[in-house]
Image 1 (tube, rainbow over the protein chains, first blue to last red):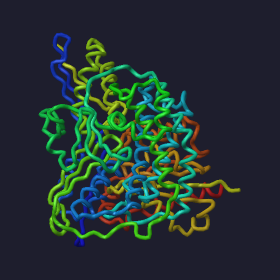
Image 2 (image 1 turned 60 degrees about the horizontal axis):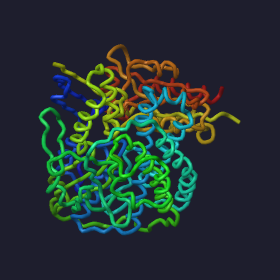
Image 3 (image 1 turned 30 degrees about the vertical axis):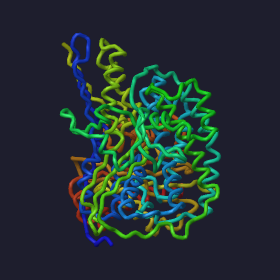
Image 4 (image 1 turned 180 degrees about the vertical axis):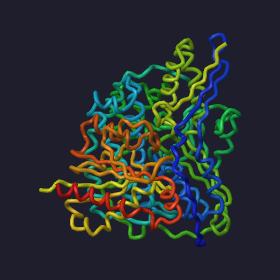
Length: 432
Length: 158
C-alpha cells in the first residue's frame, strides 16, 4: 500500500516550451556540411520525478508528460509495472485498454491531419485560413477529434490527463447505456472516416522517397497497440524487454535530447512504420480502401504519413465498434496486485510510435528508477537524416524563409510534439 | 424558450491558471444563479481545451468564457473582451500553441460560434496572484465575483 504523503508542487504558468525547435545548418559549396536539430524533451524530467513514488501514482504522473497522448504513457507504464507483479488483468481490461487507445489515436491523428498537416499541403498558413475554403473538411476533422476524446472520457472520466487507468485495470466500469450511446456515435462516424482516407490520399503530396528502416510492434493476431514484439522491415524480432540490446540512446552534443539508434543507425517509428509492417493485420474494409489510393504500400515516402494516419483513424473506429458491440461492464474492473521488487518493461504504440518504459521497483512498489523513451526522441535521428536529404533535394539556394517552411513541413510528417506551433523552427543557416 | 447560457471556466491545475475554475465553482454556489441551473444555465470547467473549446460551446446560444490573464501593471481587475478583441490580441499563453484565441478564430472562420460570446479575463496582478498561491479558499475578491455573477444574470434575463 502506498504511504500517505502530502506533496505540494507549484508550477508557474508557462507557455509550453516544447513548441520550440532549433535547426542549425552549415552549407559549404552548396552542400550541407552540418545539420543539427534541437528538440525539447519533457519526459527526461519525469524520469526523476517518478523516483520514490508509489506504483499506483505512476499512471497519473506519466499521463502529464503529454496532453495529446496521455493514454499512451499510462498504457506503457501499467504494462511495465504489471510485468513486475506478474499481474494478468484479464480480457475485459485488455479490451478496454485497446478501446481507450483507439480513442487516443483518433483524437491525436485528427488533430494532426487537420490542424497541422493539411494546411501545409493545401498552401495555407494555418487551419484557421484553411477553414474558410475547406469548412466541411475541418468540421469533419473536429468531429472525429471530439469522438476520440469521448472514447477516452468513457474510460478515463476526462480527455485531458484521464484518471481512469490503474495498475491492474480501471477504477470504474462504465455502464451499458453509455457504451450504447458511444457505439452509435462510432458507427455514425464511419462514413466520415472513409471520406477522410480518400481526401488525404487526394492531397498533392510531394514525392520524396528515401531509404529508412521502419520499426513497430508486431502481434500475431491484431494490429498492434498495447502488446507485441519489436519488429522492423529488416527482420527484427525482439522482446520488448530486450529493447536496450539493439536500441541505444546517446546524447547528441548539440541538443538537450537523446538520440536513439537501432544498431547504430536512425530509424522510423509511427503510423507509417506501423502500417508498413502490419497492413496484413488490418480488416478487409481497411485494406480495400487502402488499395483504392494510388499509394504503393509499404511506402518509403514520409509524406504518406498523413494518409497512414487517416487509415489508422478508420481502423480505430472499426476496432472501437467491435470492442463495444457486446460490451458488458465488468463487476471487478481491476485486479488486486501485490507489489514486489523487480524490473519491468512496457512498450505500446503511441500515436507517434513506440513508447518504451522501464521501471525498477523496490519491494514496497516504489520507483527506484524509471526510463522513458518516447517516439519523438526515437525519430530525431531519422528527422535529421530526412531534413538533410529533403533540403538538398529542395535546393539549398532557396532563401532561408522558404527553407524554414520546407523544413517545418518535413518535421511535421513525424508529428513530433514540437509541431504544434505554426512557426516553431528557429532556423540558422551559415553559408560559406 | 429561454436561450441556453453556458459559462465555461477555462484553466489548468497550475497556480494562478486555476482562477477560471475557481470562479466557475463559486458561481455554481451562487444563490442568485441557483434557480437557473439546469435548463437555462450550465456552468462547466474546461482544462486547457484548445480546439475542443468549439465543441464545448456547441448547443449554447450565449457563452461566457472565464479565463486568467496576467499583468505586470495596474491592479487586479476584470476585463471584458469581445471575440474580435481576443482574436486580434498580440500575446497569449496557451498549450501546444492552440488556445482560446485560435479556437475562437477557427470558430469564426467556420461560422460555428454561438450567437453571443462574452470573454471575461480575470487580470491578476501583485497581491491577488500571491493570495491565490497562499490560500486557494479565499482567492477571489468579492466585488469581482459579484460582477461576474451579474454578467451571467444579465445574459439569463435579457
